[in-house]
Amino acid sequence: MQRIYLVGFMGSGKSTVAKALAKVSKMSMFDLDKVIEQKAGQRISDIFYAHGEAFFRKLEHDALLETTKQTGIISTGGGIVEREDNRNILSQQYVVFLETAWTEIVERLKDDQERPLWHQDLEVKKQLFDHRQVLYKEVSQFVINTTYRSPENIAQAILENIHK
Ligand SMILES: Nc1ncnc2c1ncn2[C@@H]1O[C@H](COP(=O)(O)OP(=O)(O)OP(=O)(O)O)[C@@H](O)[C@H]1O
Ligand SMILES: O=C(O)C1=C[C@@H](O)[C@@H](O)[C@H](O)C1
Ligand SMILES: [Mg+2]
Image (tube, rainbow, N blue to C red; front, side):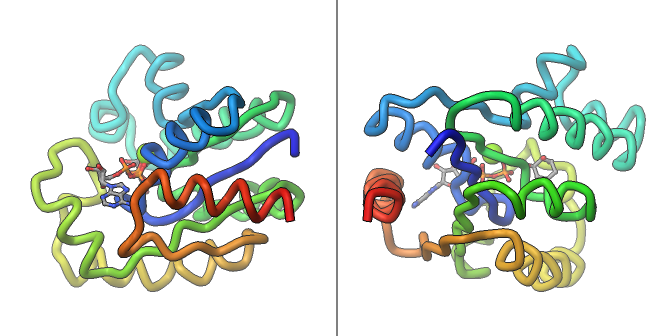
């Protein structure tokens, strides 16, 4: 497998699991959010506030396209599936959906200060969550529930699925 993409909602553990998976698989890893921050020289929250979400989505799309020329584990941002062109790219790759219960997401992100889209009404976030679950499923080949599993256990399950 040349590339493994991780998708899922904010807080599903994409960045955390990507690190654990890189460790056990000895593959390199890229965190798309970090790649964007490095390239823009700005934190994601500042990009959102200074230039708006559409501008961020363009940077995210460009970064996603770049990864298709590389090899490794790619941790995407929670909103990667919002754009249809991104979904088309992902549909041609090996994609793992980290499925996580809404109540668990709320618990994991209760102290979050970093994610601009987490800072809105709970109702609005829940709608976003429901809307995106369908899209994550649409682009993925493998779905793994993360709710009661450690990042290391999830990484191991992904490896086993690839080698089976
Ligand atoms: N399997 C897990 N069990 C318990 N807590 C977890 C698990 N995976 C991640 N977490 C915790 O949840 C929080 C969010 O994790 P992480 O940053 O990896 O999410 P993410 O999917 O990359 O989010 P984003 O889409 O915003 O980048 C962190 O505090 C992390 O420690
Ligand atoms: O769910 C989202 O839309 C986002 C998730 C994060 O990973 C970042 O990509 C950004 O905060 C937007
Ligand atoms: Mg992340």
